[in-house]
Length: 170
Image (cartoon, rainbow, N blue to C red; front, side, top):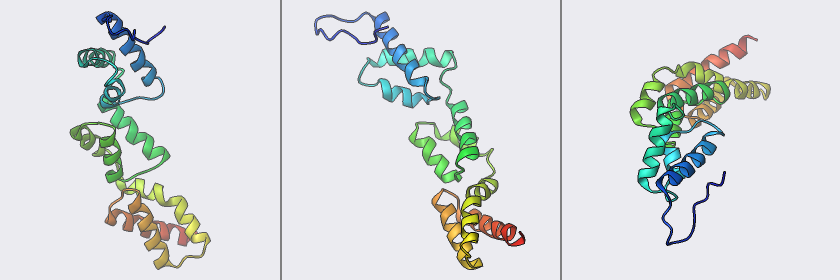
């Protein structure tokens, strides 16, 4: 299906044709990964009239192709599994993607930052141990590493102490 619109200035596209083209572009955009409402809006802005974009977003919401709450939960779960981040970093990522602040805070309440900090620091801790780092150097480097990944100072410090103790026992 050709989703391009006529470029002739005198021909006004049919509203149904506009909606179909807008929907096709949206569905193709959603086929790669789940998206937020704001991401889809950004993709369509400038290409279609605001009313057509609004109709398309409403239609996709009704079909449950767009759900910012589910997106937020899925994003955090994926991060916890693949690349753990602190609440600060997760909040920034989700805000950048256009998720509403209330949905972000609600989803972040379900996360255990201490567990995520230990998981995020485990590999780096092993590297520091294998290099023969002193306890002080280990804790300071690992805490700094975790803080750069969005964990608070207290959480990063506690995770560094726990990981040192775990590695010192083995």
